[in-house]
Length: 163
Image (cartoon, rainbow, N blue to C red; front, side, top):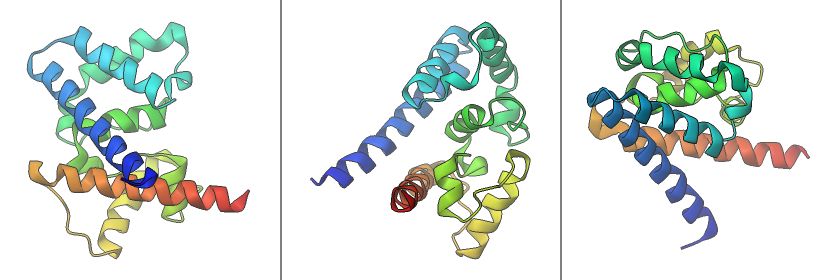
């Protein structure tokens, strides 16, 4: 297995595991498990710094209180720590949120300056433009995770080439 194959498989597997943990916590109505998962995700994916330590409990509680809105695609994640919230929303409802709001993903689809509030429209247009079917079922989650990784990696390479 090449280094690149390992990174891809590791990234996608991490998304699958985080999604399972988040969905299990929601299904079992376990706030503490949900909070622990969101905290760990923030540490591992380097977005914990976007929420001040004194505000973290409110941050987790807001996501928890809006879990149903995230599941039905009506949560507006772009207020406060959008990169962090986007990751959580993407993992809970990848069929709606489709791509993580991340600088590398923005670079990969030539939307470097996209504001968080416009991201969902940009993502929908990306899927339409590239004639990707709108992936809506649970069986499509893996494909969505693969697309997100592909774009993130493409954006990472673009940034390295600029340096």
